[in-house]
Image (tube, rainbow, N blue to C red):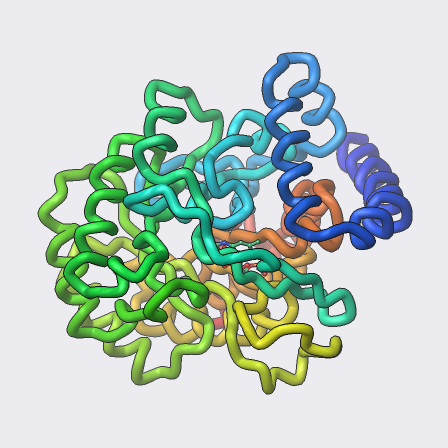
Length: 372
Ligand SMILES: Cc1cc2nc3c(=O)[nH]c(=O)nc-3n(C[C@H](O)[C@H](O)[C@H](O)COP(=O)(O)O)c2cc1C
C-alpha cells in the first residue's frame, strides 16, 4: 500500500514538474532560478508545518537503504552534491525532500564572489549544465558562524576549496587557504571533502599534481579532526593521474574519494546542444560515463581501504544502481534533480529498493562494487 502510494505520488509530481514548472523555469536565467530555489528552500525549512508537507510530498524510507559508512549512519544513499547549497542555507529542508545526506560548499578560506556573470548555462538536449560559478560562497568564517551549534537531521559533508583569486593561485597561499577553511569548518558536520577538482578557479587545478597534493595533504594532516576526509576528483583524469593521486592519498588522512566533479572535455559525443561558451565544466549526462569510469577504476584500486562516493549524471534509480554496483557506497547528484524535479530523490530511492530486491540483496551495502 505504502509503495503504491509513493509511486502514484512521484508520478504526479514528475508530471507536474516536467510538463508545467520546468518549461517555465527553463525560460529564465539559470542562476536566477537557482537563487530563487534556494530562497524557497530556506522558507520551507523554517516552519514545522511546511517541513511536514514537503515530507509528505517527497520523502521515502526503507530499511534496505540504511547503512553505516565510516561510522556515519545514512538513512538512504542519495545525497545532494556540493555546489547547489554553496552557503549551507537549506539544510533544514533537505531531509524532508528525501536526501540521505548533503554536501555544502565548496567553502573557501575567504569570501568569494565567483567568476563574472554569466556563469551557468543549460544544455537541454544533452541533459547537462555548463557551470562556471568559480566557487562563489560567503567564506568559511561566515558559514561556520551560521552553522555552529546547529542540529542536522542528516549527515552533512563540508566541501572545502581554495579561494578563487590570483593570490591563492600560488601553491603555498592556496594551501594556507584550504587549511583555513578546513580548520574553521572542522567541528561542523559529519565529514569533510577536499575539492581539488574545481575546473573554474584561477590557476586551474594545481593539486591534481602529486607533488603539490602531497604538500597540501601533509598540511591538512596537521589539523586535528575526528571526521572522515574525502578527496573530490576530476572527471577527466587518466589512469596514470589517478594512480599518482591514490599513491599520495594513501600516505595521508584520506578515507575516500568523491568521483567526480564536472568534465571540461568539449569533444564528448554526449553533447547534443550547440556550445554557447568555451568556459566552465559540464555536469549531468555529459559527465555520466567519465564518472562511471573513474568510480570503476578508483574502486578497483582501493576496495576495502577507502570509500567511493559516486557523482555525475544520476537521473534515475538505474543510474544510481550502476554506480553502486561499480563501487560507490553513496551517491550524490544535482543535475538530475534540476531536470527531473525534487521527487526524483524519493523515486530513485524507491527504484533502488526494487532493483535490490530483484537481485536478491537484503541491503544496499551488499550491492556495492558487485560488478567490479
Ligand atoms: C551549479 C553547480 C555548481 C557546482 N559547484 C560545485 C562546487 O562548488 N564544488 C564542487 O565540489 N562541485 C561543484 N559542482 C559539481 C557537482 O558537485 C557534481 O560533481 C557535478 O555536477 C556532477 O553531478 P551531477 O551530474 O549530478 O550534477 C557543481 C555543479 C553544479 C551543477
